[in-house]
Image 1 (cartoon, helix red, strand yellow):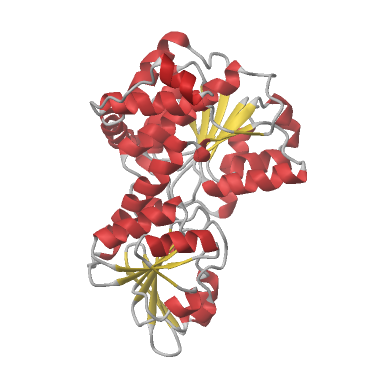
Image 2 (cartoon, one colour; image 1 turned 90 degrees about the vertical axis):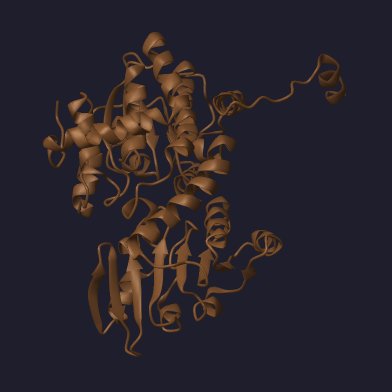
Length: 412
């Protein structure tokens, strides 16, 4: 087996992390047991690029239990945990990833995964799909379809579909109710502040938090900031979402105005250049900027470096930049995903739902091989509902069921 990891001797530490996740992911445990019996992925090769930490590793083991041969890489240079990567290799899964890759190494790892002519693609941000359509077009013929985990990846997929360049069906996992309503809101909301708090060791209550973007992730970040006692300002380009933020009790204004007021800035938009040079010049001395969007383009870190008259590391994952006006601006985790590059990502119970959707969507693609004409596929409602019902069962909760008469009434 080929593998590219830092150190196989780290495997015992990674295995303990994965075991902890397994103990707290009842949905995935149930699927692992089911897949081990039914082998839905027998004979199939699966390429997977998701933030390579313990929850992702357990998803890999669940899919492998279903008979798949897996080829795994990370989806961010700073989110791979080397002990988890080692544990997967120790378990017989091929991994090409390590923490702190250069851009060249990151792309090489993707290339080595895709050289295996995989039939199922599980992507987070669209880098596998992009590489298949650019550097590896000769391997498109092997692909049955794929699943996309996050908002940014779906934005890229929709652009490709609109241009007519997407060559195989992709299930929009992020759009499933059991994914974005919980993972994006509660998972991102908690894990972003976990990352900020452990990195800065500063208090949040009494501070002003500026949240850029009020999609499901932004809602979660703003909600948790409010719960920690902060005053929250939301910046938005969508007037509907801006009204929603106001109705939820938050102030709304342009970033150019919010820049002078914030103590913490969290971007979660999926767009680039959200916090720019002109904003840095308005910020307070000691303002802290971080990003919770998939790519490190939302905070203009390169522009800040150009402006800075001095720079210095302040703590692990905090770089300080002194401007000509004497103010210091602090960037967390190089402007990459703060909840993963400076934390452990979403809580296990949240990813249990998201990854159950991933596993069942991949199974759906195999079961419907050659039958899907569309390029962008919604997660079937029966999958969404099945995951929700299983989750309720594990929570010890039950719901009503429509009577035949009620169903007849609603169908009129």
